[in-house]
Image (cartoon, rainbow, N blue to C red; front, top):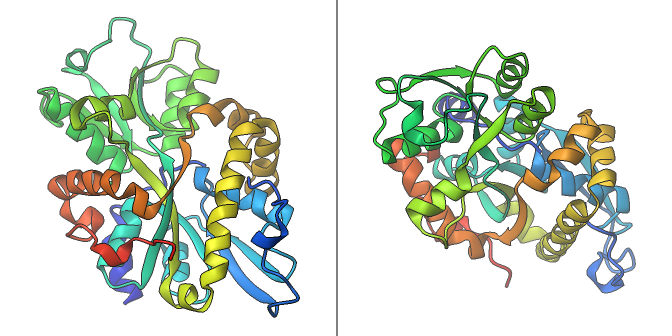
Length: 332
């Protein structure tokens, strides 16, 4: 089944997310060594925002002395699939479109929270470009063909009367390559994700963001809707065997995320230590990394609106349908 899923995911996997929990002062929120035997779990994520709180949790031993954490970075489809299709892991940070696709293809997972929102922006060095209509006849660089950054870009263009490939030429590249080309002035119009937008701005003072996709989304969908980007999944076998630990994880992850936002310098140091990313860039981009915690069941209306849009543009980007109720974790 892994090979089949891999083929289906390669075109749509978007590591868009680019990127911790203060140690709980309440001893009751930790898994007590006196009550439980040692538990070994795998926590995994990409070099992206939703992974940062996991780093803080490891540093503070937030899940308790008897929980031994094996942290793994996943860098691509094969590594992600190896973890996602195994019942041995505990918590996996993943794009929400990929989570839906895995679920719809039969992988026994549950989405526990959404923790990264938006993080997509359109920038330019052209002082005359201020409206969507100004992009007509231009070359727009976009990362991840057929993945959410591409799909949402085409959706927004269409909503403003522009057709990708006809009115606007889309050129695909990687986030890092786009950021570098913007820095050196090789391209004028670029859609990108954080922290690559911040990297472009730090390297070229002419760069300015003209469209925050979250703002543009709200104008079309309504102020009550946000763009969900990434979250945490667990497998149902682990959930059934460790119900209390999953509840504790959610509480501690939320605290870790809040600590991350309140301590950007220290958070950036953790990112450099564990993920090898530039701490100066991460610290500067922290306000626009889109970190916000919401449990999966509380994010359902945002997710369904987002999935509906992806489904209409490219059905296989979420596995051909909107996930059913069993996809959403709810603490009971």
